[in-house]
Amino acid sequence: MPLCKAALVCLIFAGSGCWHYRPNRDTATRTVVIEHPVRSGWKLTDDAVPVESSASYHRFRLAVEARKTATLLVKKYRPVSSRYEITNVTDDHIKFFLSQKMINPEVERGLRKIHRAEK
Image (cartoon, rainbow, N blue to C red):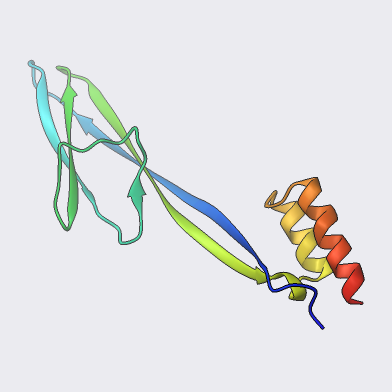
């Protein structure tokens, strides 16, 4: 018989970054527009602010000094969640949560207490 009807929801943010390199072989500074593809379910981080976005691309302006190469790092993330029924959590789950730093010691103690009571 389950002790309670509850779940442990783990929300993790998967991140990704993409470097764009733009050389300028000209003798004057140039501004280029970099089109970075939009990926479904992914969001740009706060430090990646495009000048405009469409359904397919985020557009960034980048000033490139004469005879130099400029770089732009576009960082994005997406939430990934997993749901575990508290009554179904095993010792292996608890070890996994700890190894991934998904729970703190207080939550570990609570889960172990529930796990022992179910045996």
